[in-house]
Image (cartoon, rainbow, N blue to C red; front, side, top):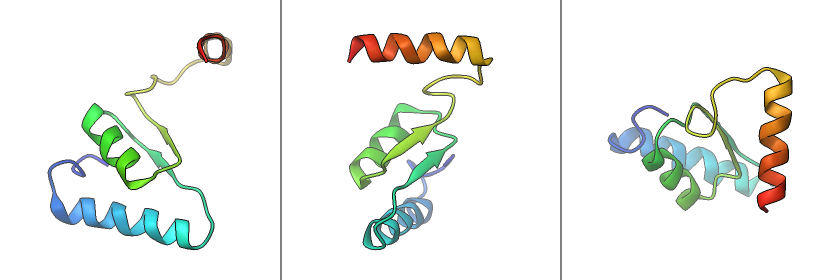
Length: 75
């Protein structure tokens, strides 16, 4: 994930993986998303789910539950 917003080859690999998954009827989950640019590129390519420090640092279960509840209340 680190170089997908700056390296054309990495970007092409991500695009191909997402396209292949879609053609097989699979969902994609990107791990290690750390920047807004990475998230934007993944969303543009149709990535289904993302995780990484941009969304949240690793949390103990209690803190994760609080985060999840706060997100559900907002939406």
